Length: 406
Image (cartoon, rainbow, N blue to C red; front, side, top):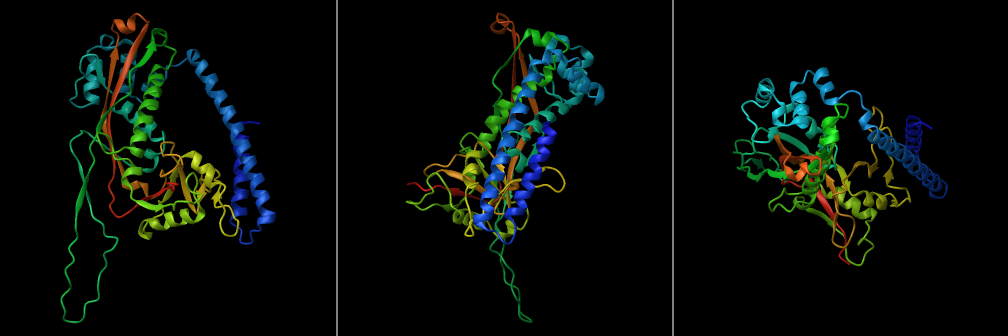
C-alpha cells in the first residue's frame, strides 16, 4: 500500500474515532472497545508509515552522490538567488574560489557586512531558509512568536497585567476614579550558539553532483535546533534563554500520595486548563505542550462518563482536518519538555505566542582547511547563530503542571 493510501486510511479512521468520542450517547461497554481497536489500528498505520518513510530517507541518503543537479545552483537559477550560488561556491572552494564579483554579491546581500578571515556572513536568503528549517525542529518555534532583528542590541519588552482591572459606574456629576496602569519590562537578550564543527570529506565537496549546501545546512539545523529548542523549553535564564517551563507560573501541583508521580489525572488536566484566565483561552490559541511519552499517558485517561479525553487528529494541516486534541485543545509535542517524574514540570498549557524567540539575522559561517582537517581529507564548517527567548507575558498566559513529589 502506498504512503498516500496509508495516510488516507489513517485520516478516515481518525475522523471516525473523532465522531465516536464526540457523540452524545457514549456507551463505555459498547464504544470503548471500538475506540481501543481504532487507536490500535491508527498506531499500526503510523508504524507502517514510519517504516516506509525511514526506508525512503535511507535510499535518498545513499543516492546522494547520484543527484544530477546541484540544488544550490538550481536554487540560484530558479529563484534568481545570487547569494545562494555564491554560498555554494564558497562551501566547496573557500575564500579563494570567490572572485571580486562574488564578494560584491556578498556585500550587497548583507548591506555593509564584510566577511572575516576564513568566514562568510551567510546570505540573507540562505539564512532565512536555515531559520525556517529550525521552526519545524523541536516544537517551540512552531508555537512561539519569532522575531528577527538586524543586531543583537539589548531589547526590553514592556509588560502590564490587566487581567484584574475593570471599569466603574460613575454617578451623575461625580468624577471618575483614578486607576493608573502599572508597567514593567522583561529582557530579550540573545546568546551565541555554535553548531560545533561539521566535517565534510573532500569527496562531497569536489563532486558537483552532490547537494553540499543541503548536506551542511541539514547538520547545522539538527545541532542548532536541538540546543536552542531545549533552552527555549527548559533554559534557566542564567547565561541562556528563559525557557517556557521555567518562566511560566505553576497552575497545578499534584498532591502527594496520589497516582500523579509519573502520571496525571483528568481532574488535574481540567484544573490546569482553567488555571489560565478565560481572556487567553477565548483567544483560540491555547494548547497543551508535553513530551511524547506524556501523550502516551494522557491517551489512556477517561472522563467521568468513561469517555477518552484524547481525540486523534486527522488530515493535519489540510482544510477540514484537525490535530490531536486533549479536552478540546490541540497538543504540541515537544521532546524537550521533561517526562513525568517526581516534582517534574511535565505539562504546559496556554497561549504560547506570548513566548518570544529573537533571532539575529546574520548567521556567521567559518570554513577550516588547516592541517588538522587536511590530514584526514576533510574540511570543517562552523556556524554561529545568535538567538534568545523569554516569556513576555505577566498575566498568566501559560501555566504548568507539576507532578507529585511522592
